[in-house]
Length: 128
Image (cartoon, rainbow, N blue to C red; front, side):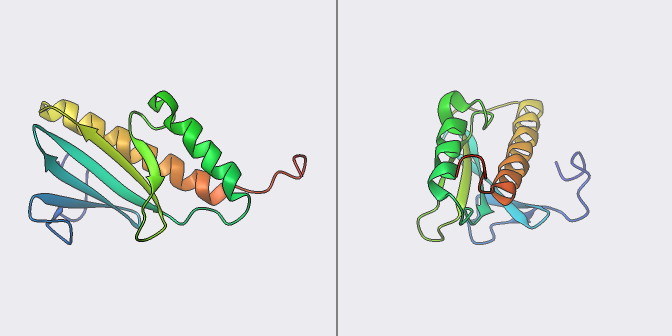
């Protein structure tokens, strides 16, 4: 996987998330890859929610979760202990390596999209 994703560093195993997990560093965002019962799961903390118009951003997150359209089947939420935006994906069944890699690439793209959404969220002067 590290070779296919052209990573400079190998995947870190079991750092803080258990021995059955691996961590992939996307810029400064660690993505945890973990084996789950009959499948696998990905999770990533995407940073703090924006301070301005927080309710509007939360509504955007909820719309993003609706039918999984803006999350590629993942789920956005707020990590309770840290207060950061969290993105999670769960696959309930085993997958071929190709399907696993494609899901991971989709997850990475979704992480990047929502990280940028949080950074670029601003007060709309026309809505004020």
